Each structure stands twice: as structure tokens, then as C-alpha cells.
Image (cartoon, rainbow, N blue to C red; front, side, top):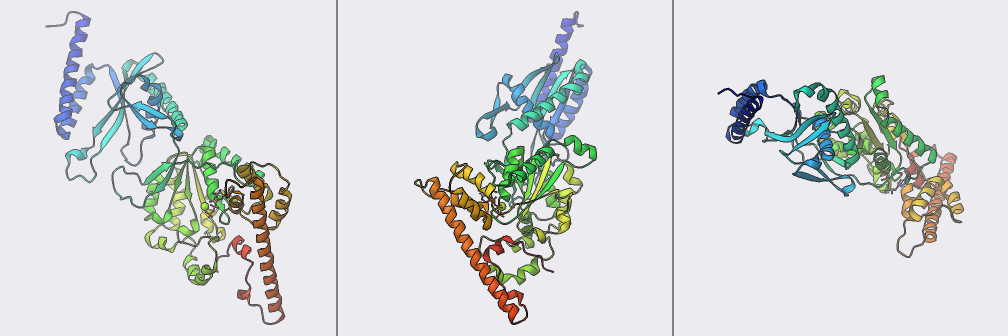
Length: 509
Ligand SMILES: Nc1ncnc2c1ncn2[C@@H]1O[C@H](COP(=O)(O)OP(=O)(O)OP(=O)(O)O)[C@@H](O)[C@H]1O
Ligand SMILES: [Mg+2]
């Protein structure tokens, strides 16, 4: 019987579609994967003739399977704030600073959104990867999640041109606002290949360091802050000059001068994640590249003690053999020596590392800082730290009086004090690291008042000065004696103990 009115025609069509949907739901539940795919294909073709709606899917992992899709993450964030208010089943995840819960729609939940008068529907769906039907599959079985956007075909142009752009833009902004920053590390226990398993493990990044609390010359501090902020706002500039949007920082100086602290301050200033890359745990250059691909935008990739991580200088082994006995005499305050055990397990080469920093892959993923730290800047291969790779070299050195004042404000809440004059005189004569100053300013018992802490510091400075003077006197005496008698035997001259800390060793020739 032919439908007599428009209303009847729509009803008939509606019930046909509903029947198809019902059959499809059964097929989806019980049929093998191949059969289901085939059924889906022909159903979609058939429905395409009658169905006035268009569907767009945004998958969590794209075909390359390497990286979570940015579009998916942006849609997820957009829906978490904009539309999940109308959803009835929600997922809750911990938000920024572990203070609030972020709600987002649960699987198969459907929400409605409106844009410029058009109604659209979002559903979070999932399908099974083919491996479920292939028992010999290489990859473990996986669920593939995707968002489905449905809208009427008359809105096609508007949705594809404006609405999707609006969703992505807003979603990205929400992600930056809400995201809990993370500290990642490359886990040695990771087994490759495993489908979609990330090579990084992470915890929440909660380091409290800021540039404000760092003991540093104010001008230097300001220069670094401006450099970082300029970088973070220079997307268009980098695009215009045809350069990947990344910047390399080399932080060098003796132990305890604030290199690691500065990395935390950088991350806090820019609101970036931190990837702490342990090079010795990276098997080879290929694995290094995979690690790089998995890092996200707005992040700092850190390689601490770069000179210890790999045989990057070509002089490392020779040095280690030669300086065996010297090392024993050095205090543990001195600079770290290379970790020999790392060399045997890691086959990462200098060229692999250079590629990591500025090869073709390094431009994937956007806004990134690469930071190296070292105690031995002269030992590094010049190719590794040349400008363009490590764009900014920052020396962190012993504590100045201005640096001390920052620490006194942080630790004792003192802007000025009569004992400051004595400290100023001593600190200008003695080489003391900010870490040592900080340690002396730290109250050791609840009874310790600021005066007690300041006098602890003065005592430490006086002792250090005495040691320096004695060491200098011994060195002078030895020098005088050797000049007066035998030809100079440089090996016999012991440098003053503080000087050992301070000077960066010259590379072997
Ligand atoms: N410039 C600084 N400003 C404020 N605090 C500092 C500074 N330098 C060091 N400190 C304090 O000393 C401690 C050690 O500093 P940090 O770990 O940053 O030194 P480092 O230069 O990374 O040393 P290493 O070369 O041994 O890794 C920090 O916890 C911090 O409290
Ligand atoms: Mg450090």
C-alpha cells in the first residue's frame, strides 16, 4: 500500500531505518568481525539513499597508530565542558592540581550541541580492532574509540567550515586550561613492539620552583624569562622563517647551582610538561626517534648530565682510565663522572642525538624546548651544542649577594638585616653554591630564629674562606719551591680544594 500523506511516508521510512538499526545492533553484537564489516558496508550504502544526515568520525588513534589524535583529544575536551552537562552518563577524571574532577561523556552517550542555529549530535563509540577475529594476530586486541558527529546535510558547509574549527579551537584551549601537567620518563621496562603502548610513563608534575624563588642575577633572570615568553608566543614567526618551533637550552655549571631547579621553573612559567629523557635507557637511535614522536606539544625534553649519558666526546673512556685514582680523592660534592654502565646497553650515537634535536622528526608536534644540563661544558662535542641546536647557553654559577638576598627572602622572609653586610663581604670572596647557602639558611630546629640561620651561614662562609686561604698558601709555597729548584712538575701542584669544584676540567688532548 502506497503512503497517502507526507507524514505517513516519513513514518514508513523511519520504521525501515529503525528496523535496519535493530538488525545492525544484533549483527554487531554476535557476528564475526569480517561479516560485520561487510554488513556495515552495504547497510551504509543503502541508508545513504534515504538518510538525510551526515556523519563524521574522529578516531582516537589514526592509521599510523603512533600517536593519539589531537583532534580526538580536542573534541573530548570540548564536549567535557560544553555538552556533557546534558549527558546522563559521565566519566570523571582528576583535573589540574588534583583539586577538581573533570567530567566527560561516557561511552555510547549521546549529547546535542547547537551552532549558528544548526543542531548536531555527538556520540562516543568504540569498535574492536581486527585482531579480535584473528587469533594469530601480532597485536593484542584493542578497542578503538571514536567520536561520531551527526548533522543534517543542509548544514554541511557550515559544519565543515566553521563548526569543526570552533570545536577544535575551543577544545585545545580547554585542554591547556585544564590539563594536569606531567613529568614523563622513559621506562626501561617497556617492551617494543606493543600496539599503542606508550614508551613514556608519567606522574603529575608538581615542582614548586619558580623564577621568583631562584637565586640568580636579576638581569640574567629577566633575560631568560623574556626569551622563554618570546619563544612561546612565536608560532607565526617560526612558521614565517621556515624553522621548527623549538628552542634548545644548555644549562651548565657546578653541582648545586640550580640547573634542575631552573628546568622546573621553566616548566612552571610556560605551563609545559616535562619529559625527563634517560639516554642510557634508550636502546638505539630508532627507539630515540620513537620516544621523540610520542612527546606532545608544549613540553620540555630534558637530558640531564648529557656528558655522562653517552660517549659523546670521544674522550670519555680515555679520561675514565686515566683519572681513576684522582676520582677517589674527590669529594661527592664534585661533578659527576660518566656512567660507564650506560655505554654497554645504549647504542644511541652522536648523530642519532643530533637527529633527535634537529632532524626531520624533531619538527613533529609543535612547541618544544630541549634542555641539556652538564657540569662539563667543554667536554661536549661542539656539534652538539652549537647555536641553532642549543640556541641559548646559560651558565649557572656560585651564589652572589643578590642571589643570597633572594634565598634570605624565600627561607627567612628577610629583606634586610644588619648581618647582611658581613655576608656580602664574605660571599664576594668565597665561592659557595646556592644549594649550600640554602642548606645553611634552613632552620634546623623549631627553635632556630633567622639570626641563628644567618650566623650558621656566616660560620660556613668563614670556614670556606679559611680553607681557600690555606689551600692557596700551600699552592703558592709549592709553586715557589718548584720554581727555585727542579723544573716545574705540574702534577705535584695541588689546586685549592674550592678551585677543584669550580673549574671545569679541560678535555684531554
Ligand atoms: N639558583 C638557585 N636558586 C634557588 N635554589 C637553588 C639554586 N641552586 C640550587 N638551589 C637549591 O639547591 C638544591 C639543588 O639544586 P639543583 O638540583 O637545581 O642543582 P643542579 O645544578 O641541578 O645540581 P647537579 O649538577 O648536581 O644536578 C635545590 O633543591 C634548590 O633548593
Ligand atoms: Mg641537577
